[in-house]
Figure 1 (cartoon, chains in turn orange, brown):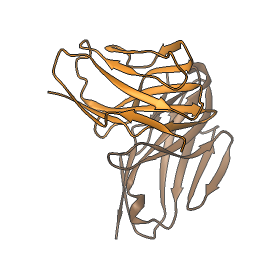
Figure 2: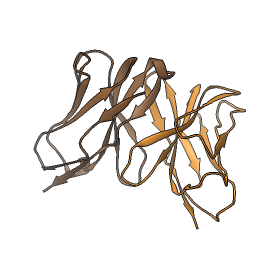
Figure 3: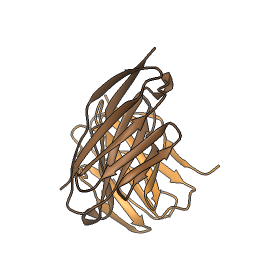
Figure 4: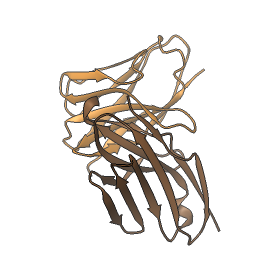
Length: 110
Length: 111
C-alpha cells in the first residue's frame, strides 16, 4: 500500500531538548511539507521541499530544521529554540494539486 | 500575502444540506481546495476547483467564482460521519504554489 507514515504517534519532550519527527512516503512524490496545527486552528506551513537536497522555509520556520537527503524521507527537528512546541505536526506530500497527509505526530512538552 | 475566511462552526441535522463558504485574498490565485479532518485525524482531500463552476463528487460539491474570490463546499444528505472540520485552501503561484489553509469550519451533524 502506498502512503505516508509518521512516527511516533505521540511524543513527549522535556524543555530544552531537541526532538526529531519522522516522515516517510512511498508515493514517489517530489514535494513534501511539514505543517503545525494548534487546537481548533488551521494548518500552518513550517518547511517544504520540492526536490531532494532542497528545502524552503514556510510561514513559521523559526525553531525548526529539516533535511531532504532522500526522496522518500523528510524529517523535522524541533529544536530547543522553538518556544511553544506543543502541537500536532502533520507531514504531507503532493503531486500536482492534491496533498496527501500522514497520520500526524502529537508533540507535548513537559 | 494570502488570507482566507470561513465560518468557525456550522450545525445541521442528519439528511439536511449544508453549505460552507470560503472567501480568499491572494495575489496569484491558482486554485481552491477543500479538505476534511476528523478529530485527531489527518486532513483528507475532498475536491479542487481551478476554474469557475461546480465540481461534484457524490454527496459533496464544490463551487468557485474567481471574480468574487469566493467558493463553497456543499454537503448533501448529511450523515453523522460528516461531523468533522472542513478546511479551504488556496494555491498561490506567487507563493511557490504553496497551499495556504483557512482556519477551518467545524461541522456538527445532529440526529
